[in-house]
Image (cartoon, rainbow, N blue to C red; front, side, top):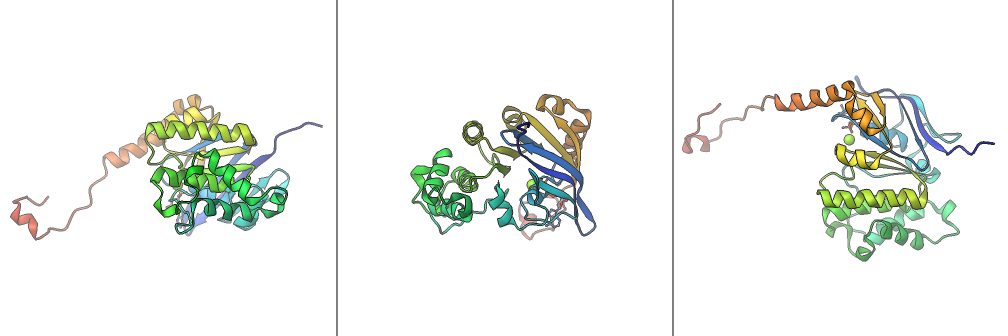
Length: 269
Ligand code: ADP
Ligand code: MG
């Protein structure tokens, strides 16, 4: 018998929003113990893929599997109980609950496997792993931005996931904060042996953290491999250059003339 690691996989997943094909047949596999990066220009389908993998969105075609189990179409809480945790690109904490209570809510969702270990233990452990245990009694709404991001991850960890999907966890962080979070995510992988899927725009961070990178563009996978190889791939360069060029040459939306424009003597363009 081989002891292959368990995998979370999207198989030929499609997802349409009206006429827009946000995912057009994407296959991705994450093994337990592996850190995989998911990159691609804005609107390429990264968040949609996380939404499909975590059960928030039902795919229009294709399957989601965890090990031998078919997770396609199961509710997000069932998918979470099966071992898939996720964070949100826009932070979604419970602002009027304390930091500890935010983590407790997640720990309590997974009561089946957690019976042997108390919710509080698991919630506190998760806070410690992100270095925010000293904030346990603060209301989530009062946290600094970086701590809110850390709490999002801690809350997902309190579920004891086998796979953790994090959507732009480094957004808005300075380089020191990013480096610290890289170390924390590595530590989580070492201690828990879970698989991580990390979406981010910071290619340096992805290069340092991930063994393997998947690149999406317009709902399709255009490259996959070690970060160094993938970054040099002409298809990837073109996708990113296309995005940069589009923003550089974007025509500014004309502004309606304002009453004050005359007073400062500005010519309307
Ligand atoms: P990314 O995370 O890579 O920036 P998304 O997965 O958020 O991209 O979006 C992929 C495409 O799907 C975009 O064109 C986006 O506008 C569209 N999209 C995403 N979610 C929805 C939705 N709920 N309704 C309609 N269109 C959506
Ligand atoms: Mg996104």
